[in-house]
Image (tube, rainbow, N blue to C red; front, top):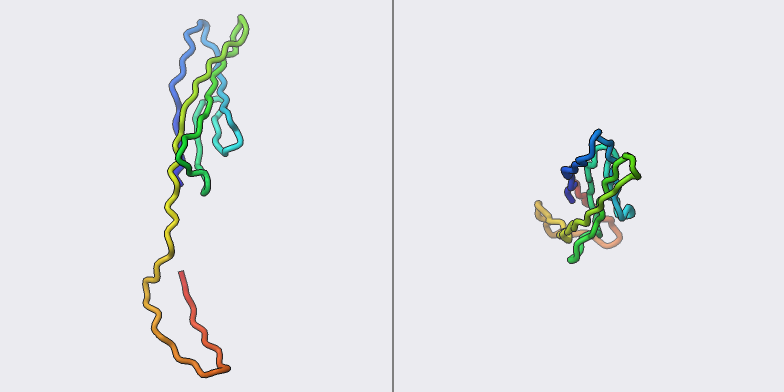
Length: 110
């Protein structure tokens, strides 16, 4: 699985300029947002692939007065189901012969 990382452009037209902070929900999927820069990052783990997109809510809040103002926006992330393919033997395993009560051993390396 690949890591999805992006930083949305968020502006607050208030003057004087105000500091923005960022939050994300849901938080139980492993995705994060940097509270200062707003950078979103998520590396889905095996088993999180599905046909329906995940819906995240990204929120930006200013620290201004009058009271703090926040704006939220939903966005979707579709995680493709990982193809789980079987291992491939790149070296042939030849037929073996062994006598009864004797051990037969051969080893694989990756």
